[in-house]
Length: 336
Image 1 (tube, rainbow, N blue to C red):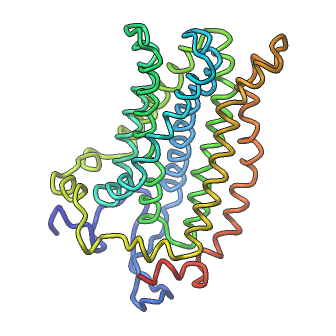
Image 2 (image 1 turned 120 degrees about the vertical axis):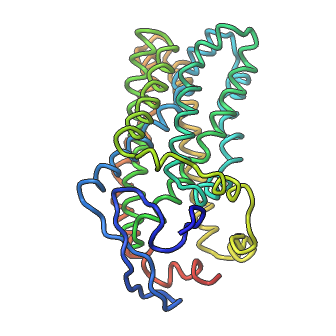
Image 3 (image 1 turned 30 degrees about the vertical axis):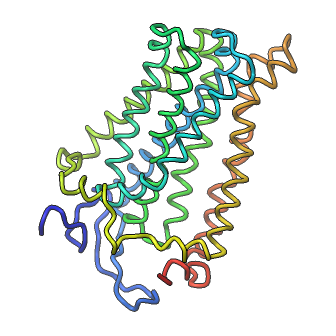
């Protein structure tokens, strides 16, 4: 088979799965490529991806945790602090679709590791770069915007990876298990970050998060992937830049489906509420309780929404799995 082909049962996959042809009761009437997990390796990869999601949020939440200290250090007012906090999401929304498309072409694991190494390095060197520039507001705004661009590809590439490697009946539970790393990461950086902030200053929070991310990338590449898995063929890369007519997404038909709009509205409400609380709760505690120890633990208390949501994620995924396998719920994906 040619190196550029990614169809058929001979294509390369993560070592945690072996693939077989299996019958599926889908509308097309054809057999689908299904897989049987190899238990020990599958558990390792699930844990690795969960840890990666955890570190994603550790890096993402560094600035909200340190917002009060950064404002005091650089002399920012609330408006300037808000510009820095919001700049992340302007970058984050720009790479969602392209990240998923590239992942489908070259492999989600490659996109995950490339983006993680980039945002980990950026997080680690941020305190160092602030010492060589006087335009701190501009630098931090651009840094957070770039961080958003890099992290915007993570969940689309994760979805692409799992959609190709996990059978449909287990996909919701696996994705939600890996996704719980977002809440866990918020809790970790909220607790450890607040302690580091009190003991060693805001710079230590960035060093801590960035170093752990780079260590995760190194260990994943060294112990779980082969050299062949890390190579990106030129034809794959060129193919990811262009979209063929056969692979174009039918956006008009997609946005006519009620389930799509339900997911969009739910994600909009959840994300806007969660990140508003996460970004501004440390500032709220500092201003409301200036003389109390509550103010110094604002980062830990900012993670309380994540603590409450953690317990419901896997439970709800268990309820969603039967629905995802029901034709009445997933028919829109087969109608194209």
